[in-house]
Length: 608
Image 1 (cartoon, rainbow, N blue to C red):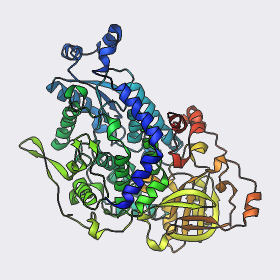
Image 2 (cartoon, rainbow, N blue to C red):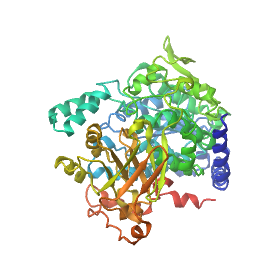
Image 3 (cartoon, rainbow, N blue to C red):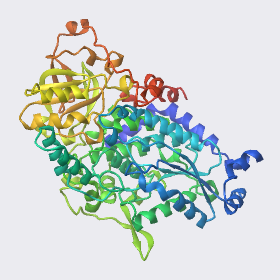
Image 4 (tube, rainbow, N blue to C red):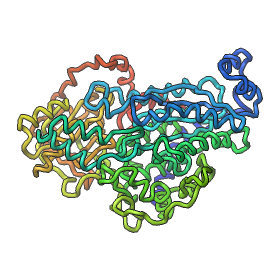
């Protein structure tokens, strides 16, 4: 094992000892002998099976059958979730084949940042993760289940399902993906049209035609944003079947993997004799593995929020510094848009997960000695699934990349580091995804231009006020202020200015996420402006140095003068409309971005 990986793992174990031991005691107590439904009162049990068919009722009365909860994020408006429409029946049928039962335990909401981008609904994004976690807990709260299957893919959905399921960590749990949509037009063409539209050189009709050719069928979006990062991390953590992440929807192989997931989860129940609950899979080693894979692939910066929140749900205290320390030694092995021109289907074709995991294991960067839903040992995930005369089989994946423009071995990595930087200085602490930023753009020192709304920046661009070097300070966008929406509406404008030769950067207490692109952006800055963070006292014209090489975020203003300034007031919009008023209580409970921007952090920290 690489010494840095061991060092971070041991540090994580030591820091988390009290909370992790409390968590394990909780789930081991819940994992009592025999199915929990056996302890229910007769009336309770009768309610739980009243709607079942005769065969399922009879099986559930026999305690040697497994009852599997199905929790789904299905809706047919969002492409990634639409394939889940028929999964519950497929899973139930597969479970009946082996004498077990599946019950649809509950649905969780699934919103899309792509649809809500720049709209008021985007402010519900992080809050929706907490709602999904609570919805998952409600679904599993009936104590009727021996195991669980989670159906979820996109941005907040998988983290929310994980957080909820981990509080029922005594249950064996498997995540079943739906897969990415087949490739449409190239990501480069899509980005070019967006940028030309921002400059007024493309019509709205051209823009719409391009977007619809890009997002065009069932499945996840094909760029390497938060949704596909979720899938990659679930597989590296051993929560998918090997090779399941990036098989396209509505294909025979996808259906075979879904059926096998139903069979496999029953093999992990107490009735099977090979009990392996979720809480014993998600530990310090599997979390370190997930961060290593995140860095090696240039994954979504949203996971600097999600992974600490997921870790805390399992009693583990993961920090940005842990993540940054791993980034220093993990090489970048893949270039998928926005870090390159290829999409996730190209990544899969070039060697995919089996090649990636093999390379990282061989370099001592992943813990092999971990539990997974496929059995003990991460080396099981160097294999990939195929259909052999209609039967699902696994074979060793490729030992060589089929396209080193997309996926490379450690020996010829794109970069010796992973590209996540903790940014720190007198403006606070944040993160920067430097893997998509050209080296010549990673350091910007320029006057500040302060904004509190994305539209204000767009209007300034159209008025010709941004034709200069500057650092855009977009403040009052943190979790407590307005729920921490993504801020991609600015990206095309800043990209145009950078292409025109201006030095531009972004500093914000908001999010940019999985599509963080070529602009140097210090994001998730905390303390956020709303709670008195330094961003609230920045003035137009202040010189700011954003240094993505050294990881510094510095305001070049006399300290006494800066301390004497009156902080700016927050947003005039008070969070009313589009349902935002229902989430005011949750915004007030959010932790800092570094603690996962979670409403549950303080409650979970007390469970020692």
